[in-house]
Image 1 (cartoon, rainbow, N blue to C red):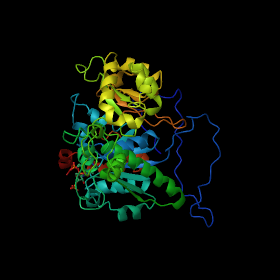
Image 2: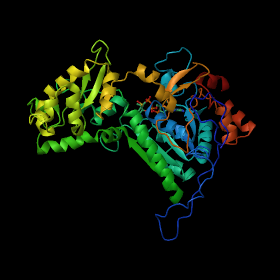
Image 3: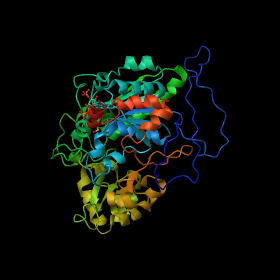
Image 4: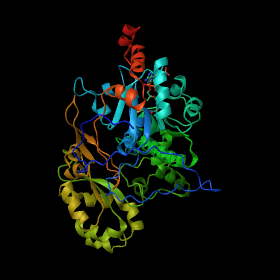
Length: 477
Ligand code: CAO
């Protein structure tokens, strides 16, 4: 694998950079008569943990992704050591480079925060010379990841049959809005997926409209699912030697994350959902899982309660869970010790119809303290609570900086910015967050060092206009 050009790196990194060992994944012979035999185990490394390369060293990704869902996936793979080559349309690139721009002339945070540790090459995939470069990439990569609109990859000529013939080991991984069915041809963005995947109908308050959430469960959630599919396909390929198609539909990804709501849908057939506030309020249930406001998602009743400063401070709130095993300490803390033994309050079942009264009393207590004071008082006696942290508080949180979950990255055009690092921590594959590439920054390097094109061939491809923006193309013609 070709060496990457030096890029700015985030502050949190291991003391010593581990060697970037290049190990192309080779097909291993399956053990005789056993299709499910495990690959031969290598010797146990004697190097210190974190000093023997990265989990996906040697894996090369042809990254045809754009916007959020696909880039989330390939960024994760890059953080685990894969060499991710992002193919972008000449002159334009990933559309998010120019969306929600905060610093004039610089790639947007939308782009920079989703494309760390990647290399960028510009290719017009609809140009014959562009296709020549893509063919070479297909032959030298392990995985092609894309999240174009349905049919777009085929329209480029990159059908599964074409790719599989050129490189039978290639894994072709796609995000689409919907799986096969009536909506398979639809274009889909985050909130469409949240609505179609069942999340919006179950989010918000019963007497209000459906709500979408701020967490990008449609885009980033599906990207995460796809990454797992790709890694599994790579593992299976060690045994089978061949690639396969991996598909994650955003509707499916959202539904997977909302599975507890499909659980509740089925429970409805057997009676009311007793942990929902509307049960205690005597409001009958309909035929579908209702919106539950801030009720706890599980069997432990919980609510968001005001703390000192609310509602003027929009985040002076805490999530308070009345977990049954800590009912006694809750009663002591809030000054209601008789509730420990009073049959009207002593058992979870007795409390269910009185949740409004109970949480109103707890809130009287939480309002006397800041959310952090409540957190300390509750944690001291094992009561699970969650302060509502603003993005400002998260950005300033020292412990998140220390673990590399929030990282400061330097960029040659925009300067320093904050990003979210790899949330998955591994002891033997340490993530170093590198800045996102400029548009086409690595075009020459990839053509020569990865694909082995000679200088004359590079000149021929470049002169054809296949790698440049339309106006340059016209000049070249
Ligand atoms: N060279 C030449 N053409 C290129 C190119 C390149 N390097 N890269 C992309 N294109 C072309 C595609 O071939 C396609 O052309 P055709 O429609 O003529 O075949 C065209 O660019 C547009 O691609 P698109 O339809 O994927 O892009 P869009 O902006 O119209 O739609 C989106 C965006 C996200 C709605 C759509 O891609 C989609 O539904 N993707 C699947 C679901 C998904 O991932 N959604 C999450 C997005 S994040 O919120």
